[in-house]
Image 1 (cartoon, helix red, strand yellow):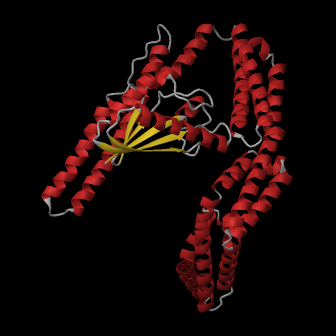
Image 2 (cartoon, helix red, strand yellow; image 1 turned 180 degrees about the vertical axis):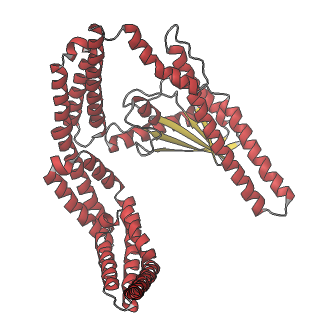
Amino acid sequence: MTTRLLQLCSCIVFMAIAHVSVADKASDQLRTNLFDEIDNLYALTQKEQAKSLSPNTYAAGYKNYLAAQNDYKKGKKLSSIKKRIAKARGQFEKALETSSYAKITFADTLKAREDAFKASSATYTAKEWQKAEGIFRKATNSLEKGSLKNAQRYGKDAEKIYRSAELGAIKNNSLNETRELLKKADSLKVKKYAPLTLAKAKSLLTQAEQALNENRYDIDEPRNLVRQAQYEANHGIYLTGIIKKVRAGKLSYEQVILDYERPLLAIAGSADIVANLDSGHKETTAEIIEYIENLQNTSSQLTQDVADMEASMASMQKELGSLSSERVGLKQIEQQRKQAERIERMFGRDEAQVLRKGNSIILRLIGLNFAVNKSDLTGKNLPLLRKVEKAINVFDAASLNVEGHTDSFGSDQSNLKLSQARALSVQDFMLTRMDLKKVQIKAAGFGETRPLANNETVEGRQKNRRIDIVIVPL
């Protein structure tokens, strides 16, 4: 009797558990069907910073989103829940649209805000940070209300305060951190063991302080100088540790040199280069750099080949059924390739880089150099400009766009002005001193807005300071 009773109870419990499991699965599926789309939309608003860029519309959507979830948990009518979700969806979609527009309207302000945040302004210059945040909220509120003029005005005001907050944070935080690092270096007697590195670190810190005081709205250069000063201070501390070990007999000079050669050997091996270090590292280093540059050129060529193939396929699809049109399209692409190759052969590696983008050819004039903060062309530039003249005349007729670019050091306004002056200088030379075929020439400066490389390195800034001539065959 007892056994049968136990079996019956077990059966009832099992059925109850199975029933709960099925019910839970059905509930989970219902929740997924109702909320899957709005959940994804909510995640997108987080990614696109809608809470900051469209605060009012986002807040309204989030309120309905939470209300729908609460109603679901309480078991309210599906029709009511669906209405809440529909409202949230519309508000989130509008918030995303406004956010997209805000990213364009407040591009400079958002960059300043991000830089101030990275400098820990919220901690080290909290009052200014909060003030900037308040004004930025006014800017986004104005944009939501459709008042573009007020939005832009508030945005510019916020940008200035964010920059000021970043400046203060760098002074209160980064400079102090560097000073403490240099004190540590002094206590470890870095001046005795790595005096050149320590002197460089102290010089960079002085330059950073001077740059911060001279131009309160140009943060890129002092930030970079502070970073370099910290690097050199740490570098000096590291070198001191190595030198102390050598002097204590724990390491030999030979061991130190061989240890520093190992990375070069490994990199050379990966590039299938035989490293010859018997007379130093210069030869192997040059071979590795050439190998990397060739890879970059190959990558650019492959990208263009893919673009050519896509253009060819588009031409075939458009003219499907017309063999003659297909042949004309392929012939045109092949002609453009040959013209680009012909132009590329005119320039050395240190003179210009020749790129193709669609039907256009870009002459990136690596060897065209200007004096610091100057836009005048000098006699040293003439040989390269004569080659540019020959390259342009490969085409019977062309439209030319002369583009000036700078690195990020200096204020946005001065960089834009300098890039425009340099582009106009090249345009003037082309119009007055080049014998060109039928061409239309425009010039524009883009300042620091279109970098090719990292402005944090000397090499990167050098790549970003450039003149590009875009040739569009007519």
